[in-house]
Structure formats: structure tokens, C-alpha cells
Image (tube, rainbow, N blue to C red; front, side):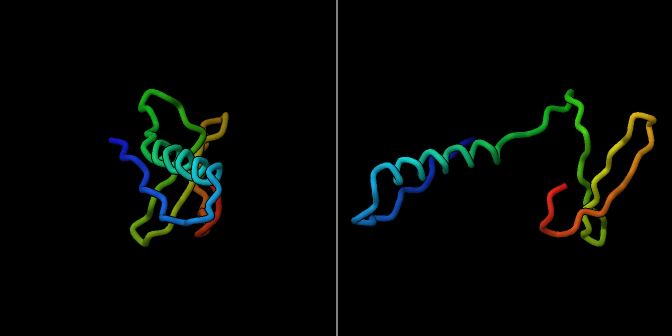
Length: 77
């Protein structure tokens, strides 16, 4: 379910273009958060969380070798 973005606060001097952009951005962000990866679509890697709360990127190369790479906090896999 997608909820509407919250109303912008009453800012007397906000430009209408900025207010419109913020509303559209909030809607876009909400839709992006709702996206789920289809279960019939191949992915190049996936992320797993270990019991100690570390994140690992799991991938496989063209020879079928599976690799596990630690993803440092705040980085992009």
C-alpha cells in the first residue's frame, strides 16, 4: 500500500516549484521503497546478514564459483 506523502510545512516563502518537486520526490521515494525483487528474475548478487550483524555480498562467477565479500557499513555493494 502506498501512502500519500506528508503535507509540506507552512513555509511562507517556499517556491511553488520546490514544493511540487518535494511532493513528487516523496511519492517516487515511497514507490521505490515498495519495490520487491521478483522471484523469477536472476540477480548478479544478493546480500545476507550474519548472526553477528555483518553484511556479506554473495555472488557467483561464470565458472560457478561462489564468493562471499564483507560489505563495510555505509558502503555500496
